[in-house]
Amino acid sequence: MEKRTAASIRARARAEMIDEIKAAARRQLADQGANLSLRAIARELDVVSSALYRYFASRDELLTALIIDAYNAIGEVGEQADAAVTDRLDLTGRWLAVTHAWRDWALAHPAEYALIHGSPVPGYAAPADTIAPANRRFLVLAGILRDGRQAGVLPPARVPAELPPIPGPLRTELDIISSALAAETDADLTARGIIALIEVFGAVSFELFGQLNNAIDERRAWFDLQARANSSGLCRSGHSAGVVWVREHLATEGSADGIHARAV
Image (cartoon, rainbow, N blue to C red; front, side):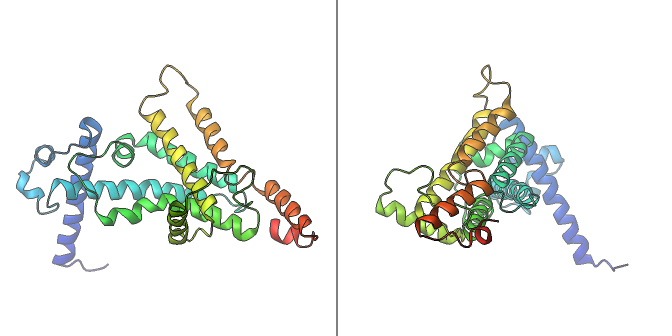
């Protein structure tokens, strides 16, 4: 049995207290929104408010910890859902698995979802260390697009629908985003990917914040329809669509060799 030192015991006690503070803060989020009160949290934990400052220097530092946890949590469920799809070239299947996982997490954790996708918290500016956790959602999509491109089953951005012309400065920004995410996509496909991501989270927010009340009761079916609709601009229908495009593309070049190698 590993010997526990005084330092390890203190570290464990500190980690447990941090978890208790964050759990109390999440309960406050659910009851009162993002206007956290360290005094109220201290009362719930039956400690003096000054004791909390040994763990979080300010309300904003505690908010940042909650935001990072929420981004990591929704990022992780998306990554796990994507990894569970054994057919890695079923791009539509991967997209649907990921988006439904995001929605399920949001419905199970509405206050935490609202913290990262709702109205900005007055007076709070998120620090740079929230960026990497937030990007986990984009990296999942980038991985789907990259795998499709590398396997040759993802059509070019102009298929099946053409975007309006992208202004030069915006195209440059989209290329930078694609490079940062290692997505291996051109500006048009990067734009469609971001649009799809925004539409998905818009659909989740519309449902979670009550905008479907008294209108649509079949919420999961409605979300699935939306996710399938915006996936059509990204990956069409997986294998079959990729094979069709590869065959047509190669035919225009006068050769049908290599279809199976690229599309299967």
